Amino acid sequence: VQLQASGGGLVQRGGSLRLSCAASGRTFSNYATGWFRQAAGKEREFVAAINWSGGSTYYANSVKGRFTIARDNAKNTTYLQMNSLKSDDTAVYYCAADFAGLGTPRAVEYEYWGQGTLVTVSS
Image (tube, rainbow, N blue to C red; front, side):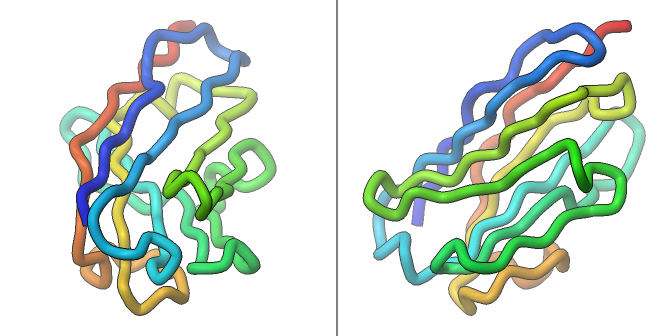
């Protein structure tokens, strides 16, 4: 599976962005997908995950209620809608795919990773 993340950019605090992760290669609908982020000088952290069908979602406490993960298997794409953005959300965001299909916050469970897309929230 090849993953291509897009949609990052500069946004003001309180604003919104939608990230997309387009997949190609193997059957996308078999995979769970997740979003992780890494801020400058910090370790990568889990943001959100969705299982293969889209029926189960998981969020980090820091984004719960503000971010929404969704997927469209017909388009081989996972989305991360980010609302009420804060300065702390500034990071490079990565999407990842997990063949187990269940969705997990553990980065080590993900076999495939896309390149990152930078999100910068200005104050």
